[in-house]
Amino acid sequence: MGKCATGIETLLDLHGSVLDQGRGYWIKLEAWRVEVGKHVPQGIRYSLTLHEPYGRRILGYDNAHAVKPPKKYKYAGRIVSYDHVHRHATDRGVPYEFKDAEQLLTDFFAHVDRLLAEVNKS
Image (cartoon, rainbow, N blue to C red):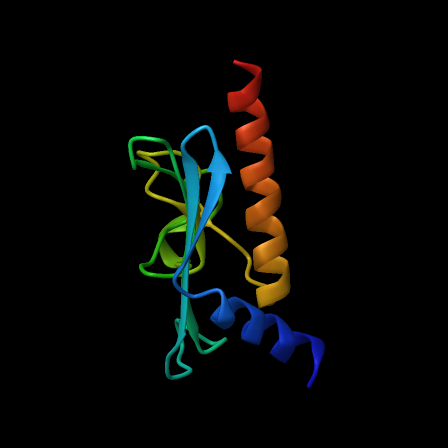
């Protein structure tokens, strides 16, 4: 089994996991196989989220809906990405370049670590 397949299997194995991050913060991981298509070329749907103590999502990586890149990019209206990041509770999402499942997990957990480090400073 190749590295890419191993990463997808790891992501799929984490489906349904809820991970305590201390101080009331928690992570929820969801991933499941779907038919490969134009908007889901990797054949998985995923939602990786970090929640504050009161349950509100404060970070999310998912591919549940399309998002447009920021308006500063030329032709922004024509480019749509399904892989994206919600950087805070009210963020509608910015495109995320999905390389493979292993990189997705690495990027998500690094982002969680940065946010929780900020929380712990305050």
